[in-house]
Amino acid sequence: MVDIFLELPDALIRAYERKARAVGSDVESLMREVIEQRGLGLLPTACKDGGPLSDDWLVKAAEIETEYHRLGYDRGWRFMMCPQANISSAKLLVITLNPGGSGVHGTTWSHEAGNAYCIESWGEIEAGKAKLQRQMQSMYDFLGVGPEEVFTANYVPFRSPTWQDLGRKPEAMAFAEYLWAWLKPKIQFEMAVCIGKDEPAKSLAKLFGAKLEATVEIGWGKVTADRYRLPDRRMLVALPHLSRFSVFDRVASEVKLRELFQQ
Image (tube, rainbow, N blue to C red; front, side, top):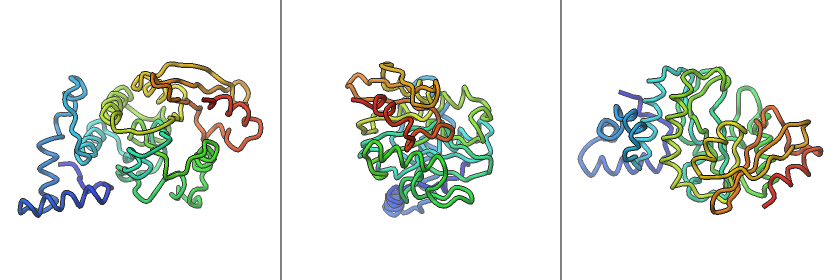
């Protein structure tokens, strides 16, 4: 049995508590029953056949946990980097490839305290002051959105020190495709940004039916970023990883970034 004590939204847990009281059960037993009936053991078939996907958030978290163990990962997993509610109210969608870090971390479905790139402390660094966090905050400012207006998540939820270090990538990517196909109709956004020009940008462009419109140098030698257009004309921008290329708040990149993000 998978560990169901995940960092789920309080509202979801309260809903299961109400269900448990209504049927004269305890919440843990009810959660286990739901997972057994609607999630575990069926994932490979669901991925392969494109079968019906449950809308139950608990089941999706359980499926991530199950696939994490099946693929033999051991550093934890993390999906959303913001409150779950942002999925239906965001102006900006930001997707990174997978959570990094060499240490062992727990399981995190969402970050209900707020945008992790603004308020979380990473290692010994002051909260919100890590290099990637500062770049994300500068990007929000550049695009004129507040942290509370962003839905941000990892395309592949499984943690590894680097993307190159993640084992069984084809299976991890297949699971991510399944997960985001379920998430797609729920996401509300005006603009999307992928941190990673190759992946997750290419997978997300395919998911949303976006076509490459322009490739623009970003004021860092010959390094470029890509601009895609969705069929409804919304923009999807694919940036190189901001942990390596700190282009926001950089004078040499400002004009190029404005060209890249032009509507």
